[in-house]
Length: 150
Image 1 (cartoon, helix red, strand yellow):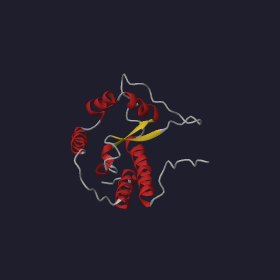
Image 2 (cartoon, one colour; image 1 turned 180 degrees about the horizontal axis):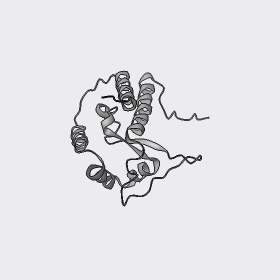
Image 3 (spheres, one colour; image 1 turned 60 degrees about the horizontal axis):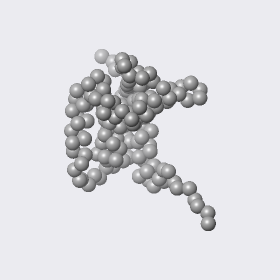
Image 4 (cartoon, one colour; image 1 turned 60 degrees about the vertical axis):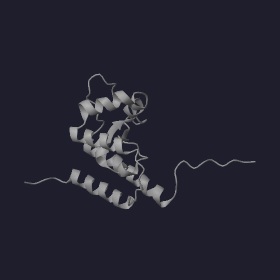
C-alpha cells in the first residue's frame, strides 16, 4: 500500500486568493515598516534568520490570529518582523505582545488590536470578498510609494 503526501496548501480559489493576500501583506509591511520593527529595541535579541545569500528574511506577523477572517487582510494589524523575532514570539508571546503594545505600536493600533481580540470569540458569519481585500491592500501599498506634493 502506498501513501501519498498530504497537500500543505490548498488549491481552491479561496486558498489561492488568501495566499495572494498574504504575499501582498508581506510586501506592504516590509515597505511600510522599512524592516523588522524590533531592530532598534534595547534589550531585545538582534535580528536574525538570514538566507544563504546573507539577506535578512522578513515576515508578516498577524497581531490577531489569521483564523479570524474579520482581520485577515487588515494591514493595521500586521507588522514586519525578521524570521528570528517571529520565532522568538512563539516562545515569548506575552513578552512580545507587551513590548509591541508599550514601546512599538501607536496607541490607536493597540486599541484596535485589543478590541479585535475581545470580539474574536464571538460567533459570526463573515462574508469576506477576498478579491476586494487583496485590491485594498494593493491600493494601500501603492500610496506608500507615491510621492506627495504640496
